[in-house]
Image 1: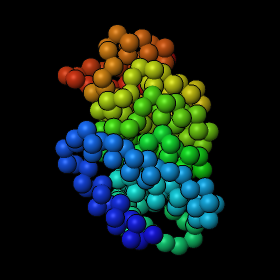
Image 2 (image 1 turned 60 degrees about the horizontal axis):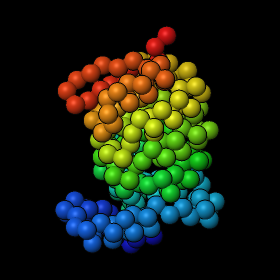
Image 3 (image 1 turned 180 degrees about the vertical axis):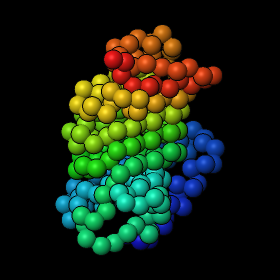
Image 4 (image 1 turned 90 degrees about the horizontal axis):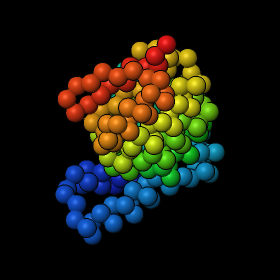
Length: 212
């Protein structure tokens, strides 16, 4: 497991090399391997540890309750009782997480913030999956979606499941969107459906929460 983590970390670093057509297929295949859900592993080590391994394997970071430091090294994941470390925040910046790996999040009960930034494989279906996870509906307080090129208004609108389930989404915190590729008219229609206010700045827009 330690060796695999070291190899995975090194390969994530190589993803910064410009893609060719051939390498794109290779990285797509490899990232799918990194995202594959091992249900036996979840049963053996618990959902928090298994999700931590998945996220770090894909180049993301996690922060646990009671800690200020972000955990980003797969080979230095904390050890101890399986129920000791609870994921509070996920930063998936430049990571290769895919929708096929989102079953890892089913058992997470304490996640309060998710940041999706420059995630090439995050699509509308991924946002819909996140919004339908019952545990996240109860715990998630803040979500950032930044420069995810495959996200459109169709994905954003599915986040109403989170808004409907958690009172915190009716405050000034909640969703923030930056530099998404959706056409502005479609996005405005989407946000009106969600009853969410916006502040515009060049090339970005911030969602401020539900308008009362």
